[in-house]
Picture 1 (cartoon, rainbow, N blue to C red):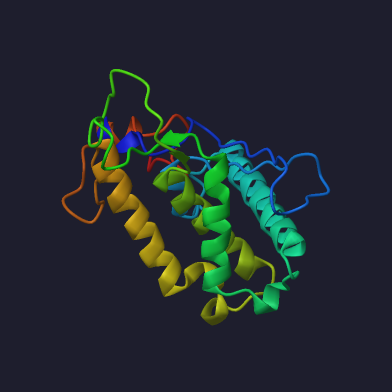
Picture 2 (picture 1 turned 30 degrees about the vertical axis):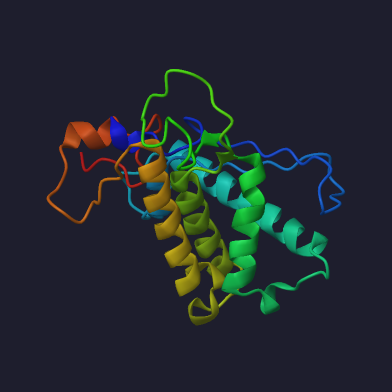
Length: 205
């Protein structure tokens, strides 16, 4: 049960832009962050259901458009070719204002408490699982849109380190643990119950 708590909502994170530093032309932008299993890109295999693939592709397209708009509204505006891992980190921190996951500070009495019994003033953040899935889709979209793997800013070491730091700090603050899939294979029942959507890689049957 613990490893499914990192996503902001069962299926998506809706990002609505209010008046902030960036003046956005559109009244809202939507980014679907999906579940944390989406960072494994769906393999093109007959076992994948068409609905799962189309959902993934739609999410990826929205995410890519959202990032493109962020670059255009950046001050000064940024072109994709000049985008670096540092700009990706700036984008991820910017998204925190739209997060829905309570991350307790060390001064909070509920720090490390997985099920706080009462409200607290701690900030809301983007969940690690949402960010991890988002970076997976943007990394794939970058290369699908002509970018070279070796210059992919979403695969930068700084981005990987940032995601690891977010994962570890949120695990401590929220009193949960994120299971690593490299150790012994978890129970198949655990995997199937970890998301409300079919796994992107499909079942082997």
